[in-house]
Image 1 (cartoon, one colour):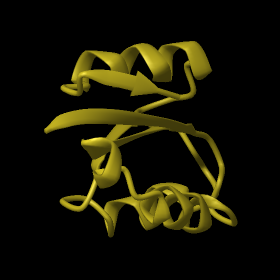
Image 2 (cartoon, rainbow, N blue to C red):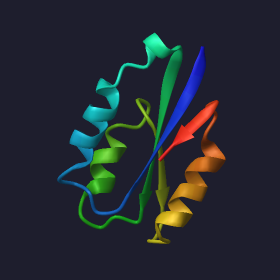
Image 3 (cartoon, rainbow, N blue to C red):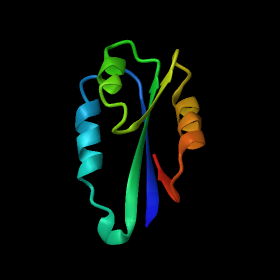
Image 4 (tube, helix red, strand yellow):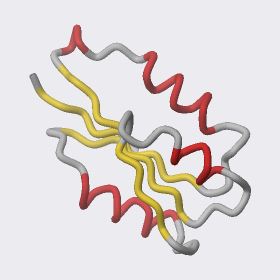
Length: 89
C-alpha cells in the first residue's frame, strides 16, 4: 500500500485545528490503495494551539517550531519528515 503524506502547517489555529484534523481523517483513501500519514507543523503558535497539538502526539506526527518562521519554513520542516510516496499540503 502506498502512503500519502498530508502536511498541515499551522499558526494560531486553536479554533479550527481539531475540525481540520477531523476532516482530513474522514477522507478514506483505502479504496485508492493509499494509507495516510498526517504531519502537523506548529509554527510558533501563541494562542493555545500548541497545547491542543501536544494532546495529539502519537496519533499524528507533530513538529513544533520555537518561533514563527513562516509557512514556507513549516512546509520545509514537514517535507523533511514525510515518508509517504506522495505529498499534499
